[in-house]
Length: 631
Image (cartoon, rainbow, N blue to C red):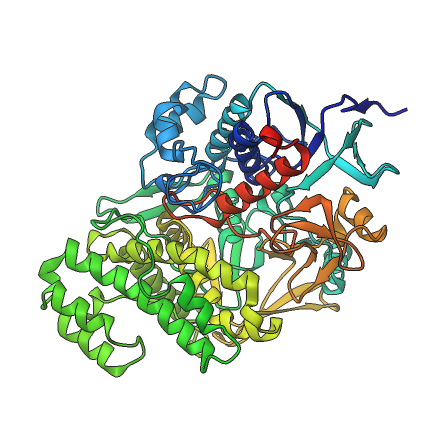
């Protein structure tokens, strides 16, 4: 028999998921309850997550310290500040870096984490384990800030069912057998593991029949990498974050050592237990590395050209040349930030006064030939000019005579990326990334309203901008580029190039990889698809989301990339089979059609994550709490 919880008279909220999203929502409930929940009322909040509250699966303690975040420690916060445009009051708190300096060294149960926290600098890239410790602290702080009339119950379990009661309430069933009677439920589940498609099942079957190995898209910390044999060749599709995780776990994680020569060059000393990774992808190279410099200008300034009003205007139904104009406005915003920083930090590398340059710059369109001439007059060395990543990969139309030629090109490309991400001469790269973060709230408004455009038209207009944002904002730490160069020099990583295609050769039992960059093919008995799986709520192993959809109380929305849970994009209420919003059930995150942007956001950036959490927290409290002072 199941045990029943939450049967007192207090309204019951069940929050399923206690990672960054669930923690951020709890913090906003704590802050807003002081305003919206009368002292005479009460509320019970049940938090459900199989991992310790705060960290969730991705940031859990029990993973390798070699797995890092790809944002700088000073650029990560879980707390609102005066920049956040929300109804609830700001509740400032420390960034990851500030928390590590003040609290991290006091971690008594893990000396390794305490040592990392003590050495963490503002521009450091923390381990995911340390980020998890920060998140667990944030959860404890939010729990401590709940007013006395809000009772918190944490269940370290998995939610496996969500059903309706005849009286209009709901029942959340846990993996422990506990059933929680709820008035409102919030699904904050994060990324969902996708199922295997027909092609992936065929790859897995080929590997099983022939003594090989196949790892489909997955979170790297969750898979058994012992499948990849020492000295054996492994074809890897993907050269982004998931590849970086794989790369360090099968090299340094197997006893190899990275060390610097006297000239500062990073070298790799193999342990002999590494596989040989033959890596390629659609683009053939990773996104530009995250800038690690400090810069002289204001941390994040409000958009000057790509304002929310201008972005909305450009995606209106009658705006001419929508995609090109929108991309030009965004590039101009990034260019303004880059060149302002260059003139402030490195005036000797410019030839015009900032006042003159800025006036001329402001009056020109990004693609106007006069803009290029202005930049050439003001910044004589081309290396000092802004270098935005092209939408089309530089490898897309390149063919190399052999693998050493491709390796030499990649080495030069990676070396230049490290230089631009770390040297003070290029601090404008960091300023441009800050400008990108600042315009995201306005871009989010366009994405969620569409301004009357059909979905396909909105995607066509916004596509180039979102792709640029991904290439500029999702890069690896510069040190990962250095590690990749070192592993290539040691023969542990070999490049395949761009436009990678994979097939299975049944007679030989081998996986076959081809690219447009190299002649011939690469073959191996082992294949890794190094990327996160597409979200697929119908492949949810816990049956929580599939159960909602099968019962008609949820609706699956299919796209080329994912199967997500349909929600109202303004209220985050879950939509049923008929498209009706359910006011008792909410969902937000990557698995849903709303609330996907954010988590671990940059301070002073009016991040959508905070505004979404605040709006939903207040909606919940208005629904569950009697009006204060009779209102």
